[in-house]
Length: 113
Image 1 (tube, rainbow, N blue to C red):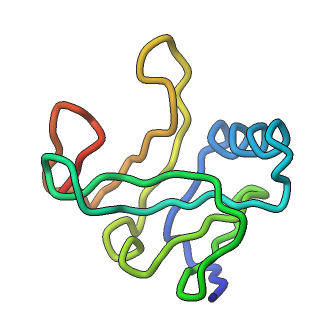
Image 2 (cartoon, rainbow, N blue to C red; image 1 turned 120 degrees about the horizontal axis):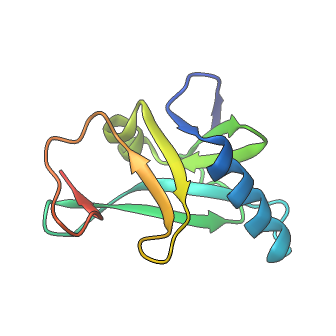
């Protein structure tokens, strides 16, 4: 596990507050936010966002607005410079990632390449 000050991924204020609310509500105060990509989807990769108890050995840990973010090295290369936001609404509420490295995406909004 490595800690870094370099801005690999940032959280908006709204996203950071939502993560803190979720950790409080689920009584997971020591957890962090896992952000990354996994193989799949119609464009080749899909975003993976979840709460995780601890970083894995190879993870990079980023401290952002009071939230620990866990990322594996493979995801960092693809997601460097991305911003995680949280959108409210009746449809498509949830975490949204703005990634300057995406070359293509599809209509589902969850698959990128």
